[in-house]
View (cartoon, helix red, strand yellow):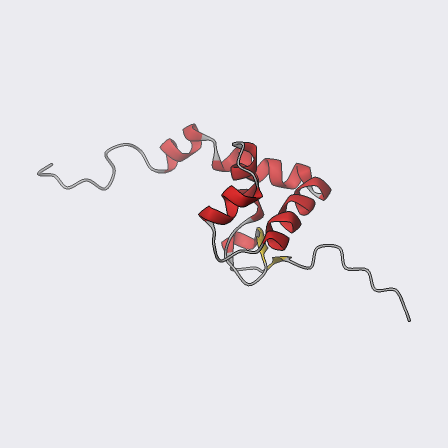
Length: 100
């Protein structure tokens, strides 16, 4: 029987889904979201409580993917957590009605 190598079977990228970022296959949950939770000190069980539609295998796959593509995911995490960037994109008060 031939050996079949599957690197990250639960992780995919699709243009038009989450901006082409790496996501957990069959969901719209980015790997970076799982990594942010993990870096906050949450373990796999706690992440599963936040995302009950995921399986432990999917969470572990996201962690594995992170360690194989750490630079890519760290860049995403940095952009997500860049408060200055978000404030520039969505300034305080923008979108409020004039009578507020």
